[in-house]
Amino acid sequence: MTTTGLAWPPLADPTSEAAPGSPVAARILRAATGLFYDEGIRAVSADRVIAAAEVSKVTFYRHFASKDALVVAYLTAVAASERAALAAADAAHPDAPAAVLRGYADVLGRESCAPGFRGCPFINAAAEYADPAHPVRAVVAEHRRWMVGTAAALLGRLGLTDPEAAAEELVILRDGAMVAGYVGGEERARAVAAALQHAGAAVVAAHRPA
Image 1 (cartoon, rainbow, N blue to C red):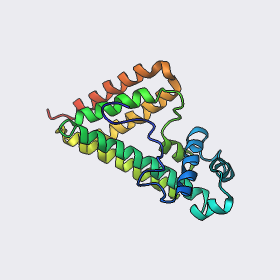
Image 2 (cartoon, rainbow, N blue to C red):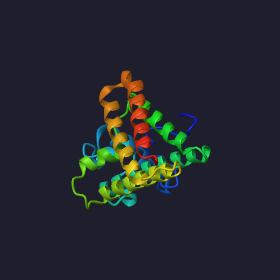
Image 3 (cartoon, rainbow, N blue to C red):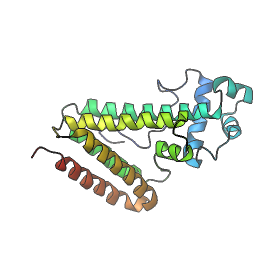
Image 4 (tube, rainbow, N blue to C red):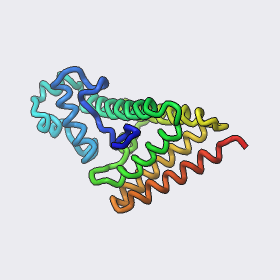
Protein backbone atom coordinates (compact mmCIF):
# COMPACT_ATOMS: atom_id res chain seq x y z
CA MET A 1 0.00 0.00 0.00
CA THR A 2 1.27 3.48 -0.83
CA THR A 3 0.18 7.02 -0.12
CA THR A 4 -1.94 6.89 -3.27
CA GLY A 5 -4.21 4.35 -1.60
CA LEU A 6 -3.64 1.85 -4.39
CA ALA A 7 -2.78 -1.81 -4.04
CA TRP A 8 -2.60 -4.71 -6.48
CA PRO A 9 -4.11 -7.13 -7.02
CA PRO A 10 -7.33 -5.59 -5.68
CA LEU A 11 -8.96 -8.96 -5.14
CA ALA A 12 -12.55 -9.38 -4.13
CA ASP A 13 -13.42 -8.13 -0.67
CA PRO A 14 -16.52 -10.05 0.47
CA THR A 15 -17.32 -7.21 2.87
CA SER A 16 -17.51 -4.62 0.10
CA GLU A 17 -20.74 -3.09 -1.17
CA ALA A 18 -20.47 -5.17 -4.37
CA ALA A 19 -20.28 -8.45 -2.45
CA PRO A 20 -23.34 -10.57 -1.62
CA GLY A 21 -25.28 -9.47 1.45
CA SER A 22 -25.43 -12.93 3.01
CA PRO A 23 -22.47 -13.96 5.20
CA VAL A 24 -22.64 -17.44 3.67
CA ALA A 25 -22.52 -16.04 0.13
CA ALA A 26 -19.59 -13.85 1.18
CA ARG A 27 -17.78 -16.92 2.52
CA ILE A 28 -18.31 -18.72 -0.78
CA LEU A 29 -17.06 -15.69 -2.69
CA ARG A 30 -14.01 -15.42 -0.44
CA ALA A 31 -13.11 -19.05 -1.07
CA ALA A 32 -13.68 -18.70 -4.81
CA THR A 33 -11.57 -15.56 -5.05
CA GLY A 34 -8.40 -17.25 -3.87
CA LEU A 35 -8.93 -20.39 -5.90
CA PHE A 36 -9.93 -18.66 -9.14
CA TYR A 37 -7.03 -16.22 -9.00
CA ASP A 38 -4.35 -18.69 -7.90
CA GLU A 39 -5.31 -21.68 -10.04
CA GLY A 40 -7.50 -20.37 -12.86
CA ILE A 41 -11.27 -20.30 -13.20
CA ARG A 42 -11.71 -23.34 -15.44
CA ALA A 43 -9.32 -25.41 -13.31
CA VAL A 44 -11.45 -24.93 -10.19
CA SER A 45 -14.71 -26.84 -10.02
CA ALA A 46 -17.78 -25.82 -8.07
CA ASP A 47 -17.08 -28.80 -5.80
CA ARG A 48 -13.65 -27.33 -4.96
CA VAL A 49 -15.23 -24.04 -3.96
CA ILE A 50 -17.94 -25.83 -1.96
CA ALA A 51 -15.28 -27.75 -0.04
CA ALA A 52 -13.13 -24.68 0.57
CA ALA A 53 -16.12 -22.66 1.77
CA GLU A 54 -17.33 -25.56 3.91
CA VAL A 55 -20.91 -25.39 2.68
CA SER A 56 -23.25 -27.96 1.19
CA LYS A 57 -24.15 -28.13 -2.50
CA VAL A 58 -27.68 -27.10 -1.64
CA THR A 59 -26.38 -24.02 0.17
CA PHE A 60 -23.99 -23.16 -2.67
CA TYR A 61 -26.68 -23.28 -5.35
CA ARG A 62 -29.12 -21.41 -3.15
CA HIS A 63 -26.76 -18.43 -3.31
CA PHE A 64 -25.27 -18.91 -6.78
CA ALA A 65 -27.35 -20.48 -9.53
CA SER A 66 -24.24 -21.76 -11.31
CA LYS A 67 -20.48 -21.60 -11.25
CA ASP A 68 -20.65 -18.95 -13.98
CA ALA A 69 -22.83 -16.82 -11.69
CA LEU A 70 -20.12 -17.11 -9.04
CA VAL A 71 -17.45 -16.10 -11.56
CA VAL A 72 -19.49 -13.02 -12.44
CA ALA A 73 -19.78 -12.16 -8.74
CA TYR A 74 -16.02 -12.68 -8.29
CA LEU A 75 -15.09 -10.34 -11.14
CA THR A 76 -17.70 -7.79 -10.10
CA ALA A 77 -16.20 -7.67 -6.60
CA VAL A 78 -12.66 -7.35 -7.99
CA ALA A 79 -13.81 -4.49 -10.21
CA ALA A 80 -15.45 -2.75 -7.25
CA SER A 81 -12.23 -3.04 -5.25
CA GLU A 82 -10.16 -1.49 -8.02
CA ARG A 83 -12.65 1.30 -8.57
CA ALA A 84 -12.70 2.09 -4.87
CA ALA A 85 -8.89 2.20 -4.76
CA LEU A 86 -8.72 4.61 -7.71
CA ALA A 87 -11.48 6.77 -6.27
CA ALA A 88 -9.64 6.98 -2.95
CA ALA A 89 -6.39 7.90 -4.71
CA ASP A 90 -8.15 10.58 -6.73
CA ALA A 91 -9.82 11.95 -3.60
CA ALA A 92 -6.42 12.12 -1.89
CA HIS A 93 -4.98 14.08 -4.84
CA PRO A 94 -7.94 16.06 -6.23
CA ASP A 95 -5.74 18.63 -7.94
CA ALA A 96 -2.98 16.28 -9.06
CA PRO A 97 -4.22 13.73 -11.62
CA ALA A 98 -0.62 13.09 -12.67
CA ALA A 99 0.16 11.94 -9.14
CA VAL A 100 -2.70 9.44 -9.30
CA LEU A 101 -1.45 8.06 -12.61
CA ARG A 102 2.17 7.89 -11.40
CA GLY A 103 1.06 6.17 -8.20
CA TYR A 104 -0.91 3.58 -10.12
CA ALA A 105 2.06 2.91 -12.41
CA ASP A 106 4.45 2.61 -9.47
CA VAL A 107 2.23 0.19 -7.54
CA LEU A 108 1.40 -1.85 -10.62
CA GLY A 109 5.04 -2.15 -11.66
CA ARG A 110 6.08 -3.26 -8.19
CA GLU A 111 3.19 -5.54 -7.30
CA SER A 112 3.09 -7.31 -10.67
CA CYS A 113 6.50 -8.74 -9.82
CA ALA A 114 5.57 -9.81 -6.29
CA PRO A 115 5.13 -13.44 -5.21
CA GLY A 116 1.57 -14.60 -5.68
CA PHE A 117 0.84 -12.29 -8.58
CA ARG A 118 -0.95 -14.20 -11.35
CA GLY A 119 -1.76 -11.45 -13.82
CA CYS A 120 -4.86 -9.38 -14.38
CA PRO A 121 -8.01 -11.23 -13.25
CA PHE A 122 -9.95 -9.75 -16.16
CA ILE A 123 -7.43 -10.66 -18.86
CA ASN A 124 -7.19 -14.13 -17.33
CA ALA A 125 -10.98 -14.49 -17.38
CA ALA A 126 -11.21 -13.29 -20.97
CA ALA A 127 -8.66 -15.91 -22.01
CA GLU A 128 -10.72 -18.64 -20.35
CA TYR A 129 -14.09 -17.57 -21.78
CA ALA A 130 -13.79 -17.38 -25.55
CA ASP A 131 -17.40 -16.38 -26.29
CA PRO A 132 -17.61 -12.55 -26.27
CA ALA A 133 -21.35 -12.80 -25.57
CA HIS A 134 -20.83 -14.76 -22.35
CA PRO A 135 -21.86 -12.94 -19.12
CA VAL A 136 -18.30 -13.25 -17.82
CA ARG A 137 -16.97 -11.44 -20.87
CA ALA A 138 -19.62 -8.75 -20.37
CA VAL A 139 -18.14 -8.00 -16.93
CA VAL A 140 -14.65 -7.94 -18.42
CA ALA A 141 -15.73 -5.55 -21.19
CA GLU A 142 -17.49 -3.22 -18.76
CA HIS A 143 -14.42 -3.06 -16.53
CA ARG A 144 -12.25 -2.34 -19.55
CA ARG A 145 -14.51 0.55 -20.54
CA TRP A 146 -14.29 1.86 -16.98
CA MET A 147 -10.48 1.68 -17.00
CA VAL A 148 -10.17 3.57 -20.27
CA GLY A 149 -12.81 6.10 -19.24
CA THR A 150 -11.19 6.73 -15.86
CA ALA A 151 -7.76 7.17 -17.41
CA ALA A 152 -9.22 9.50 -20.05
CA ALA A 153 -10.86 11.63 -17.36
CA LEU A 154 -7.58 11.96 -15.47
CA LEU A 155 -5.68 12.74 -18.67
CA GLY A 156 -8.31 15.28 -19.71
CA ARG A 157 -7.60 17.17 -16.49
CA LEU A 158 -3.98 17.38 -17.65
CA GLY A 159 -5.11 19.23 -20.76
CA LEU A 160 -4.19 16.59 -23.33
CA THR A 161 -5.44 17.07 -26.87
CA ASP A 162 -6.85 13.54 -27.19
CA PRO A 163 -7.25 12.02 -23.73
CA GLU A 164 -9.26 9.05 -25.02
CA ALA A 165 -6.48 7.96 -27.39
CA ALA A 166 -3.86 8.50 -24.68
CA ALA A 167 -5.96 6.44 -22.26
CA GLU A 168 -6.12 3.53 -24.70
CA GLU A 169 -2.35 3.64 -25.04
CA LEU A 170 -1.81 3.71 -21.27
CA VAL A 171 -4.12 0.73 -20.76
CA ILE A 172 -2.13 -1.20 -23.37
CA LEU A 173 1.05 -0.32 -21.45
CA ARG A 174 -0.63 -1.51 -18.26
CA ASP A 175 -1.40 -4.87 -19.86
CA GLY A 176 2.19 -5.27 -21.04
CA ALA A 177 3.64 -4.30 -17.69
CA MET A 178 1.54 -6.92 -15.92
CA VAL A 179 2.79 -9.62 -18.25
CA ALA A 180 6.40 -8.42 -17.97
CA GLY A 181 6.17 -8.38 -14.19
CA TYR A 182 4.62 -11.80 -13.95
CA VAL A 183 7.16 -13.37 -16.31
CA GLY A 184 10.15 -11.40 -15.07
CA GLY A 185 9.67 -12.08 -11.38
CA GLU A 186 10.45 -10.13 -8.25
CA GLU A 187 13.98 -9.20 -9.28
CA ARG A 188 12.55 -7.21 -12.21
CA ALA A 189 10.14 -5.13 -10.13
CA ARG A 190 12.14 -1.91 -10.19
CA ALA A 191 12.87 -2.17 -13.90
CA VAL A 192 9.23 -2.87 -14.78
CA ALA A 193 8.01 0.05 -12.67
CA ALA A 194 10.59 2.40 -14.20
CA ALA A 195 9.80 1.26 -17.74
CA LEU A 196 6.07 1.78 -17.17
CA GLN A 197 6.65 5.25 -15.74
CA HIS A 198 8.94 6.18 -18.66
CA ALA A 199 6.60 4.85 -21.36
CA GLY A 200 3.57 6.43 -19.69
CA ALA A 201 5.29 9.81 -19.54
CA ALA A 202 6.11 9.50 -23.25
CA VAL A 203 2.43 8.84 -24.05
CA VAL A 204 1.35 11.88 -22.04
CA ALA A 205 3.99 14.07 -23.69
CA ALA A 206 2.94 12.92 -27.16
CA HIS A 207 -0.63 14.09 -26.54
CA ARG A 208 0.14 17.50 -25.05
CA PRO A 209 -0.79 20.57 -27.11
CA ALA A 210 1.97 21.66 -29.47
